[in-house]
Every structure is written in C-alpha cells, then in structure tokens.
Image (cartoon, rainbow, N blue to C red; front, top):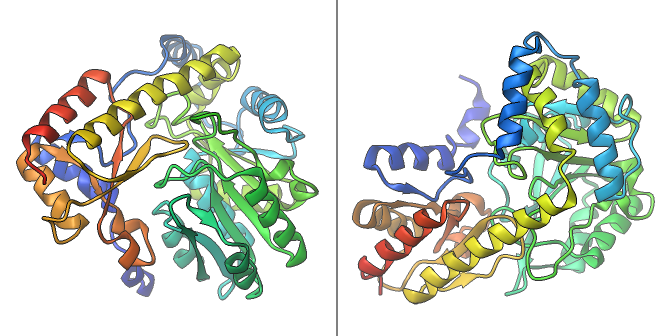
Length: 382
C-alpha cells in the first residue's frame, strides 16, 4: 500500500451517505438534491444519447460546450476566455481541482487552504506530495486575516486554493478579501485555484466575484466550476477549468491521463443549460433561499446555534451542550431521529474549533425539510 494512504481516510461524506442508506435516514450529509434537474436538460440528454453522442469526446471537452462556457464566464464572471486555449472540461469540479494541483506543483511545494475546507483539497495536496498551510476563517463573520494571509504567503506557496461560496461555511468572499488575496498572489508569485461551483447560489444581497476578474489575476488563476450544483445534476460529473494557455496546457495533460474526458452526451446536453435565461439563476437562488430559511427555522425551533450561510446550500451548526462533541451528536441524530448529517470536524485542521460542529445540506424537497423539522423537534435535543 502507498504510504500516502496513512495521511487521509475514506471520505466521511460518503461514509455518512452509506450509513444513511443503512438506517433509511434522511440524508443531509451530502450535497445531493433529492429532486430532479430541469426537464429541458433531461430531454437534451436523451436527445444527445439518441443523436450519436456516445463515443469519446475531444479530451479537453466538446467544442459546443467549451464555446458555451467561454460565453458564460465572459458574461457572468468577467473573464475573457478562448474556448480552444483556455477552457477544459473535466469529470466534475473535483477532478478539475485535482488535475490542477497535480499539474501545477512538485513534491515539497506548499499549498495554502482555508480552515475549514472542502474535504478533497487535503488528499489532493497529499497525493501531489505537497505541504499544506492553513489560514483559518476568524470570528462570527468568518473573515480572512490580512496578517495571517501574509504570514502564509511568506512561506512562498506555489498555490492557494479558495472556495467561494464556501463549503462548509457558506461564506462568500468579498471583493475586498479577494483583492487582498490577489495582491498577495502577485507579490509572492502564487497561483490561485478558485473553486466556484456554488457561484449562482447566493443570499442576502451578496455578490459572487471571480478572483480572475481582479487586476492581472487572469494570468495566475485557475477558475473551476461545473454543472452539479447549478443544474442539480451531481451524478453527471461535468465540470470545467478556465485558465491562461500555459496553465491550461499543463492541466490538460494531467486531465487526459486521469479521465480522458467527461461523458460526451452529458457535455452536449449541458449546452442547453448554459443557454438558460437569467431568470433561471434568479429562481435557483430564490428557491435555495427559501430552503435555507426552512432549515434555519427548524434549528431555531430546537435552540441549536448555527452560522447563517451567505451562499451554497449548507449550514454549520453547534452540538447542544448535552453532547460531548459533534460526532456524538451526529450518531444521536442518525440513530434516534433518522437524520444523517456530517460531523464537520472532518473538514477542519483545527479540530478544537470544528469539534462540536455538524454540517447539514438543505438541497432537499420542501416536504423533506418539513419532515426534518418534525424529527428534530421530536428528538429532545436540549
């Protein structure tokens, strides 16, 4: 067995999903909708399957989809991209980040990540043989400290990996915070990998900003997004990378040998989704805002403390005092309330901060969330 395996465990998210299935519980542990994607998108996939799009795609993505992505990032993200030179289609945003880390680092290089983090970033760094430098979110507003960022940058990392809107916190990085990161990247010759998979799921008047649109960052940014969250197709595994030609060429080499290409018919179908009108994205954010408020109401009703998310579709909550930590609370909810959540300590480097937290995904039908509220109220948590 590779020695690398001792440094990370099996995905806690996938483990909780399996336990949820065993217990026939409501699964709030994984960011996976329990409702269907838009019918127009499903019909486009059927049409592609019947229309001959069933063989290998061009490795870096179907031309029709790369054209659509280039148009989208220009219009929404403020990034100029040549579909032939700057856009690479991957097997989900997760592969996009993995391929980027492997392509742009050597063993011994340093990578900055925030604390907490999406769970795949740490194994990516370990598989690449790199060293992690953590910068924590601070205080109730989850700010990134200029002093801590500068101290981390003084270690001369090759990459900084950021995620906005953030999983698991729901934090949306402000233009001010992103400008600080951009300035430090330029000062210390660091490349930013920015995971923007939740870019259209934003609340309370917050705005999504792509760091590649700030100053000269387009030359040193790898922008990652995908279809999973925006179009409710987490099982399709189609993501993309937008980067300058040199970075793209490196990422494409790794992507080619990791997965060859994302599913051809689903790539073709997604050109339909990327042509959806602006109203679709407004409705998406409004739908999730309603679900967010339902989840917060359920937690308030049980006097469970939580952080109000600014984006994405997760809530970080604190275990009530009667439980020793978030893991005991997780077991109680699974066994006594039939609700599977994620013990969020798995997403923290500083386990003292994350030890009492759980993460709940609210990308569920309204009926599901009403049932969650009923079960929480019945469980006598305090």
